[in-house]
Length: 385
Image: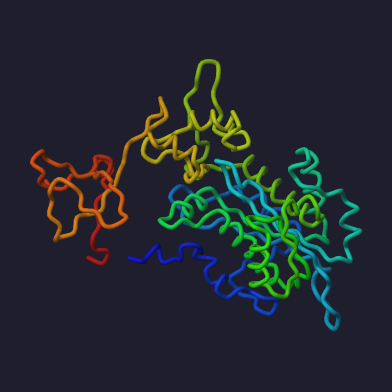
């Protein structure tokens, strides 16, 4: 067995190498995806974000998409590299439902006037939906603007945060930002300055980025998305990408998934979850109506590591049918069964699938009926023929 799934407590499998050996402008690892070949293929890739793996494929990472690189951001032979500025921001950090989307936008300082002539950029949260959509279409249709998008689906967030030693949302955010920077460098863009809307203490975050990318000058601030145009552009790309992804959401559990039963004169829509924030009445109603399975709970649109979801699955919410499933580690061979569990230091008491007779003796192991009903058996030897 691999200890802690073979990973460190903080780093996902895809980022561990990057953190140990961060990419620089001269170090362009092939593990990054290639940029899209054109604006058309870039927009097609964004539209296809809603196409996802079927249920059961929950261990993969969300996609990283790189736009076609603007010609003005690449150095010409015999000429000094252009001064390229990048901004980084996210959307969907707090919702109970749906992905968190990180985005980076960048362009050459020589194209500032041309890019800014297409609209006044601002923090996406301060704009109406129609304004964001218009600016997003202008940004993604502008040859001078490059961008990167990293999607962290709810299943990825849940899996990381529910580890024995959690890989928390701040760490995921930092690594997503570094992944986008590294991928842009690998595409041949030499970034001069990078503006980042902070996650956690700005000074600590900036020091980490400078340690990994010493060639870049970083500005890490609160509300950077409201102060710097390039960071505002990243905010708009992240927000609209997430909104459109949810509008076109394809359930990995199967096409046309209908999660709740029709009520009198009303059929609650499986996609009527509002903003996804736990304070949103539509989201709260969706959570109450769409607990689809008493064992496995919700579809993978839901972040199982969030407090409201844990509460719903705890069996403490009246009227919500939840199966109580508790595991216990096997007894060591040299342990004496005396009706009580011998615990290791720091180990919590857990109930077991095994039945116990009144005499305190350990009876023959009884498999939980769910596993019997579905033909699931315990495997102890993976190499037997």
